[in-house]
Length: 152
Image (cartoon, rainbow, N blue to C red):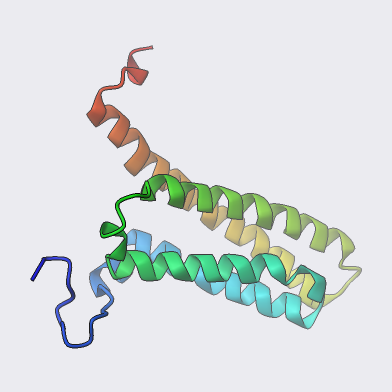
């Protein structure tokens, strides 16, 4: 048995509750909840904007499951910090554009205005997540490898 298996090997799948209580776990849960709220608000008002929150909801759920089950440690072919960073940056850009358009085209519709408001909030959460990934994972790995980027 390897150390990567869950505590309950009979189920074959378990989530790490310590990860869910960590900063990264809480950020992923906040992103997941906010994407769901935005999806519901768009479903109630402007159904043409449903694709963005639904796609980000699914992608964030996949990353939450991968990280909390430590399955990403078995998939070593991907650079997970870089992949997670790109997920956060692309989600922030997508939600920023969708929120601006939804706020501009809402014409007093409460659901669209609420979705735009939560969209701006989730842009901040995704941006904070990207910043923490960049600061903790990418710059520390570059400093450890000694690539000389800090010498310039």
